[in-house]
Amino acid sequence: EPEVTQTPSHQVTQMGQEVILRCVPISNHLYFYWYRQILGQKVEFLVSFYNNEISEKSEIFDDQFSVERPDGSNFTLKIRSTKLEDSAMYFCASSEKTGGNSPLHFGNGTRLTVT
Amino acid sequence: GQSLEQPSEVTAVEGAIVQINCTYQTSGFYGLSWYQQHDGGAPTFLSYNALDGLEETGRFSSFLSRSDSYGYLLLQELQMKDSASYFCAVRAGTGGFKTIFGAGTRLFVKA
Image (cartoon, rainbow over all chains, first blue to last red; front, side, top):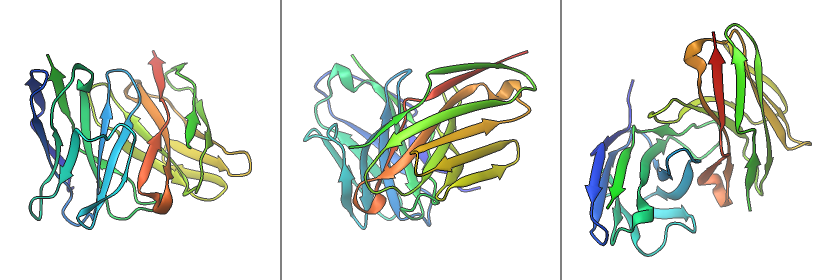
């Protein structure tokens, strides 16, 4: 079964550094998402991406965040200047459509630790 | 805005039935979904309700009442492997481009 893959599985970085989290969505999916989950807490929406542009973003997704689809398969999340509170699990997801009956397929996540 | 309320924790014994409730407030309703997440794992899709009533998928069923802004996930014949967090979720925003998750219900299944 096709799956969403994320790399790296774990990233440790120092405060103020830039990080890029990578994702390969399922190949026939058109909608891409980033979520984050602070340990033990809810899954929080960051951004959705369709047709090479952001379709929706949350209040969390401020100017330090950006997303890109640099080629036909990868989808990246960049955090420009990391803060301690950015430490979380970051999940990439993709879906075929936007309807509720088109479920999100999540990758296994990248655990980001900011020291 | 959007908000979803669900209990933080439920405990049940193996073989039993458990119901996890979810109430929601949202503009532009596109249906209610349920996801399961094991510790250290990714959320995985369980079920979806767009219309009122019960949807059954094996041991799991999900119910929706749009007039009450309420739904539940029913897990039957509980197994130890069902111990996980369960999240209700709604599509929101214009065009349904974002899925908002509840805080999750931690299910503990005891022998």
